Amino acid sequence: MIDVLVGSPLLTLFLVVALGSAIGAVKLGPVRFGAAGALFVGLAVGALDPRLGEGLALVQSIGLALFVYTIGIAAGASFFRDLRTQTPLMAGATALLVVVGALAITAGRVLGLDASITGGMFAGMLTATPALAAATAALDGEATPAVGYAIAYPVGVLVTMLVLTLVVRRPLPGTRDPEPLAAAGLLDITVEIDHPMLVSQIPGIAVTPGRSDGLVRMSYLLRDGRMRVALPEDALERGDHLVLVGIPDAVREAAEALGHRVSRHLADDRTVVDFRRFVVSDPHIAGRTVAELRIPARFGGIITRIRRGDRDLLALPDMRLQLGDRVRVVVPRERMDEISDLFGDSEKKVTEVDFVTVGLGITAGVGVGLVSIPLGGGAALALGSAAGPLLVGLLLGRIERTGPLVWAMPGAANLTIRQLGLVLFLAAVGLSSGQAFASQAFTLTGVAVVLIAAVLLTLALLAFWALGRAVGLSAPRTAGAMAGFVGQPVLLSHVDSMVDDERTESGYSALFALGIIVKIIVVQVVVVL
Image (tube, rainbow, N blue to C red; front, side, top):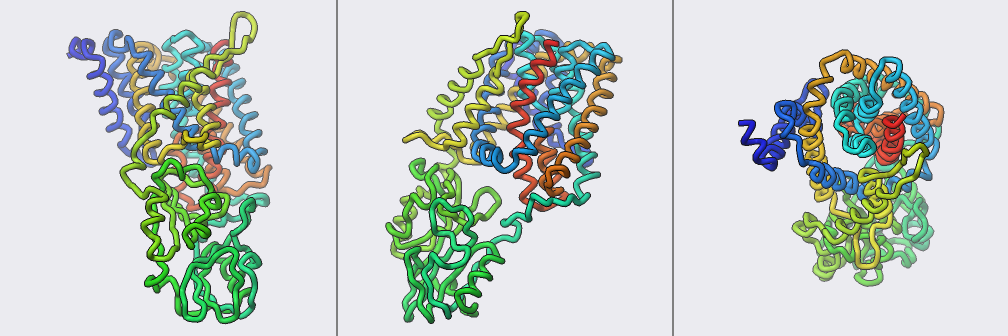
């Protein structure tokens, strides 16, 4: 059997992927290892024969590049937005990662661990797969970092889950972290106008490009028995009936300023003006703002909501559309087909990937990763095939499009490619490192790695919690950021199972991409000192 596996590396690789994914799906209490199951199965299979781990370097590189690039593309917009809004948290987390790296070096030396094992331990307890790749590359392909990684990885997940469970429900003042607007959902009502005014004068109305503080949109307008779509340039008259949609408190405030709410809801009458959700599948639309589409001027309609993932968002003028968004448009019935043609409205197309932009993006990322900075003594620091594509992906995700090139991917396609890249990388790493793991894991070295990882990570998480309190963040945002600080997606799911608050995702996205970059840099220092 071993000879069959040795003779067919492709068979071996995908057998590990299949078995690892099955094991990763098993729930052990609150823990599910997910893609990391491929690493553990790969280590077990690779330990059977050293030949099983040979010739897999290219698979590792391809898998890693796909994984980190898709992370960057998905997180680009939120990452650069969060640079402005969550700077204290991100700066504090960066400093904390540097301190953890220094403590790992110190503890490793005290307990006699090899620097390569210590580097792998640092990457593993912080579940940073790209950092493992950076450590391996810094040591010219040496397999021992994967040993420390594999031992420390489950420790990182379990310890973080336990700490999150203990602290997530402990309230924090959150003096600089107000309640999220979308937490209350969206409300739509019909009001009768008692106080004539311009649409642009409605309190909280979102009709002006360049402003992101609008909390209310309008849709249907009934005047003198005739129904049409309300337009930004309208002057509302006494007796008009108008539909408002937006954040509940803001809608109520706008309704009070305009007049009074009526029981007949205009949106129930779809004979003249209708509404529908259209799928953004045309690449020419992706990356453009709601205002740039000029729906009121071109079609006599208006975009009121955008469904992105599992969230219903108010369509603000400066909001950029993404492939896969489901856009709710209120428009005269006879123009429905034109709106459908505009957005593409194809479920099939949003599952397709433009490999021209993927190929160009990863090419640029790998090129950036080749640039190295000499550290003296023959050592050098490089972004490598992990941080290079990640950094370029973040930049392109922020840009979203360059002329005809749309860098963004549909969300479902992005997640599929990301997961494929991750399991291929971890399976190949496991197969390549199986022999080294078997020789070290069940020795005093393995025990030392577990102890150091558990102690350092617990201290780091408690310090992170104190950081959240110090900068005035809420408990949900701090818990989400803590999950991003460690970086395993299952940790965000664990937080979401305990608290329903969109600030957890915002905190996670702010720290996840930044954390990967910092860990990649720090781990290269750890393994060479």
